[in-house]
Length: 274
Image (cartoon, rainbow, N blue to C red; front, side):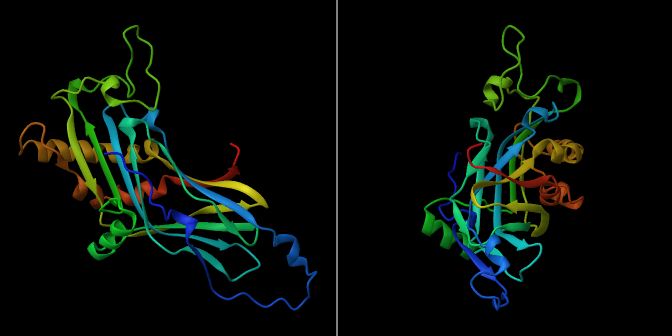
């Protein structure tokens, strides 16, 4: 199911935390050079789809982000933080791999440490946000819906080929990539883990720029595939063919769900024209 980004995405509600020391050097202090505004637009991307293991198809990815924090590396005790949680829902089967938010103006440029917090919302918090935005939020901090196959039937590359043997373009519609039959088993992952993770430093410059959060699905899948296959084999043997397998306990046991997805994330800035 395709969903749009919440209106209060990321930096559309930012507050400054902490206290800044008063400027005692007058109107023309050296700080003025770094006090020019930076106009920042957040963008969230999924990468590595074309490199996913051949046994794995991801159809939907959902994230619940309750905080994004930008802490100046030097020169200030003020940190900027989001004021409201938001959800991201990517429908990969429809080729949705990027969601762009709303621009916000930072009063000061410079180098910032960017951190993110992913955590599930309480039912009360979800009800309030759903009512305000009119859209559904992911239930967990990370949600995944996909298909996996294993054994002798696991062959070919995600993306598939056309009738002439040419690779299909990515992102792809899964019905073009494969004929989904009984060799594929659907699975669902829903994490109740709360994770706060420091990504890296970025440089905010005067003028317009994009703050890109990238989640590398292939990097995540390298460690997650075997536990997914194991869970599907074990749990699926006890159920009915085609039944959706809940792999949440298997991934969470080895910190291969939300924790691994955040470790596979990165952040960077680029000119808004790109």
